[in-house]
Image 1 (tube, rainbow, N blue to C red):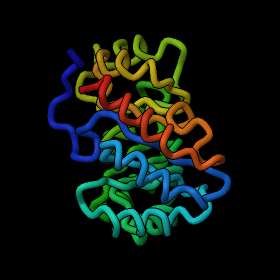
Image 2 (image 1 turned 180 degrees about the vertical axis):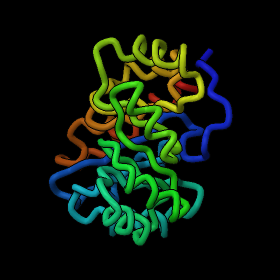
Image 3 (image 1 turned 60 degrees about the horizontal axis):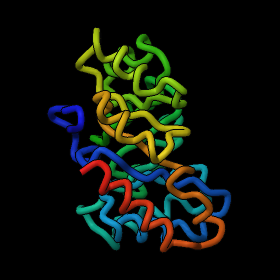
Length: 210
């Protein structure tokens, strides 16, 4: 049985999501369709990906509110405006920037800043973060999550960055709120266009956490 996390925001309810980052954005729309077709309801498109804003807007148009499409690598207030204007349902950052978090709060968009220590996690949460991205992942990742949540059980932790598909269940058993999967899920889909294999991996991950 997965570790229970009460009152998750809608974009984290499935407890696993795809992170799409590419040097060429040509296949991002196809990748979104592939993971959504496999049953994944939340996708993050990093703003460092060429055409990210257009991909977010198009995905919202194609899939509507049944799919949560967010923006990643949101570093400051300007990036928040870019993401919100594109229709992003949430904003993820690799860092803690209080102005970015506050801009998300004003816009009514969940903020998920990147944190590596308990101090950063608590500071981000007090600033208004919906959840804390635990970044980068660690060799003792699930154990680290348990150790943090023992004294700080109200934190909403989302490990990402180097998380392998085979580690997802262990993170969720450790009561991580959700897990973001990037390269281990994508493999080379955004280079080769092999969306069938991407969809199969997404479906396998979802099967493992149900």
